[in-house]
Amino acid sequence: MGRGGSFGVLFLEAAEVPEALPMQGLSTSLVLIAVMAVAAPLATRFLDRWVKVPIVVFEIVLGILFGPSLLGWVQSTAFTDLLADFGLAMLFFVAGNEIDFMAIRGRPIFRASAGWVISLVVGIGVGFALVPSPEAAVIIGVALCSTALGALLPILRDAGASRSPIGIAATALGAAGEFGPLIAISLFFSGKQLGVASGVLLGFVLLTGVAIFYASRASHTRFHAQITATLHTSSQFAMRSILLILTALVVLSMVLGLDMLLGAFAAGVLWKVIISRAPEVDRKVIETKIDAVAFGFLVPIFFIDTGIDFDLGALTSSPVTLAMVPLFLALLLIIRGLPSLLAAPTVSSRADKSALMLFGATALPIIVAVTTIGREHGFITNGISSALVGAGMLSVLVFPLLALRQLRRTEVARPPLPTPKD
Image (tube, rainbow, N blue to C red; front, side, top):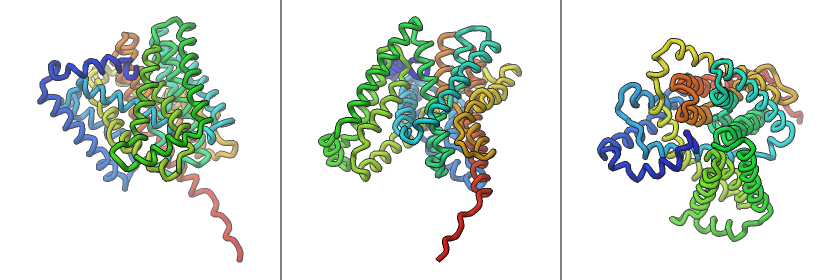
């Protein structure tokens, strides 16, 4: 039920696209979305010599530029929304698949989880102070306690920092700041009583936990042999297996009334366990294929569609609403960033801690999902939703950039290793 719990509805609506929208309009939108997807990495590479800007920022900005808010050349349709939902699901699948649980176990994940709980409680309190409604308070609180693990992992990987102590701590923050909000969304907005929702969530966790346990115990020799035999053929058994696991857990989470992103995240973890004993060469090839499908096709559509759906008019219609963007950006840094310092490695410089605080406060996908739910159910206004998404976009643009500068400052300040004597 990502992006407002409309995944299943959109799947049905997609079949009616020819009646709902002229084919020429749909074709134009699809071509322009493809153009934006190609233009985004070109813009990133062009500016890379001066400033490193995450590619998702260009994707969202291009969506706003070509969408109804400005030029109006691209319109959001049921079909493009469906592709965007697949992109969001794939983003969370990749997040679940890339987390190194062995690296973040123990102190990093426990402290990151404690920091997330603090962020949630403070966020809901601040949300209630801003909008005195329990539902709106939960929406705002969940949005402000999230961390964009799916956006952070590629940034850390590209910077070569994913295996560093700060990179491991940031990964733990992302795991807590992405998995925690998914649980909160499923509990508070499943349409069930809290006790019933907790029981359903526990049942889902147990089912996926049992599947992951048995997957970790089995050798999967025949499964890996089939993957190896078809890795470079049209059969593509590995990618078809990923599609099966992803859709099965997404549908299961939807049937249980949980958020679909919970199923997508669990699918990524399950696949990581299943493929862990495959030959390393095969694993690297499969990871390349996953990146190609996710970041070469589906994930860009999600971020571009986010820009297309962004209500710039609601944001700029009122000075008060517009002022909420820097307010929410500051609250992300305070409510999510400060508690993130709990996960800092024992020996961390001030620059390391500043970078970790900025990484923890980087958020967007969860904000898009939870504000869509809140807007569609009438819990929050379009203006608050747009302000939260706008703050999330700025956090993805500004915070990782500043964090990487802090890490580079630490590298410069670190004394060189002594030269070994002959």
